[in-house]
Image (tube, rainbow over all chains, first blue to last red):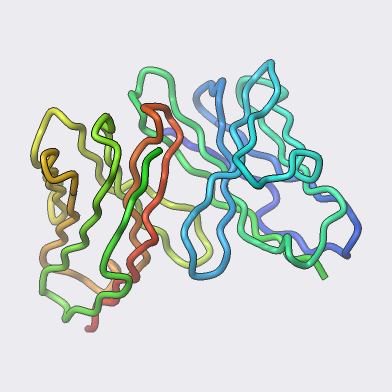
Length: 116
Length: 112
């Protein structure tokens, strides 16, 4: 299957700082990528859709100014958590559908963010 | 919009027994139903999926069945092994797009 990577795999930061998480499709191009957030023992919740060459679209209740998304190329999307607070601590996971694969999505390994 | 319900939330089986996890969905236009396995601290891994033009799909010890009329689909794991222990999620596309709506997850424990 296709490979999606994330970096870093975990990060600890102080409250008020910003953190950038990268999502890369390693062996295919992805014009669209998705960002999910997962709290402990809960399901994945879609946060936003990252679109190459255009603005990201956000799910209801997700602050676009807090979670900045940039889809810089056909293989890279970044999520920046700005002015992070302890309640932003979570597991952030990206995914990408591969063109021609008819819905099948490939997920990254996730990034554990802890805000102190 | 799509709504996906999953049960049970936890399932404990003896090694070698079968495990069944069920999901229901609300959008009759949905045509793709994946199942993911998530181990602790890792991202979800696709284990099997089914499209609406078939009623059943099998891959070794794993099978998925789909009942479009009733709008539910199930994951079947036979001859369970301790390494099958994980959280399993079903999902369905929202608005016929790539966006996936996930079920609440089932924590499967296979006792040796």
